Image 1: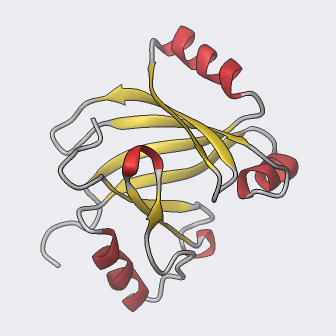
Image 2 (image 1 turned 120 degrees about the vertical axis):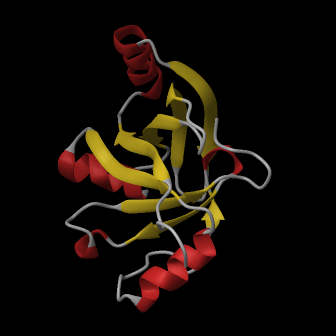
Image 3 (image 1 turned 90 degrees about the horizontal axis):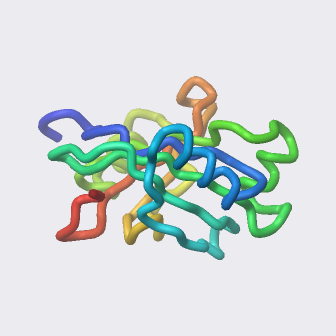
Length: 148
């Protein structure tokens, strides 16, 4: 693999109890705009993507996450830790190649294959125990579209 594996900080995922309230707070305090709202049944979350900046490699976002059920990963996180930073998402050019590279370096993969993420992205999570306690998400923008 030539060049860096990670291309940008794609987003910071923040767990919240009330998505509408959190989105309004971020919009009012920081002037951010909600560019996408989705429900991801597989992951058990309602989410809002708020655009922070545009860059040649793609935008960066604050991703607000409200669980749809208490037994979802974000629901369990809120129960244990309360509201706060849930994960960091990094952009990659090819999520499958990135997974293969990291697996070869001994990083534990939560996802061995990409799954559907926000705004049509292909995503995969890496185990926080191998990354300083930080749940890490790899994000490959939908083909033909930068996340901007």
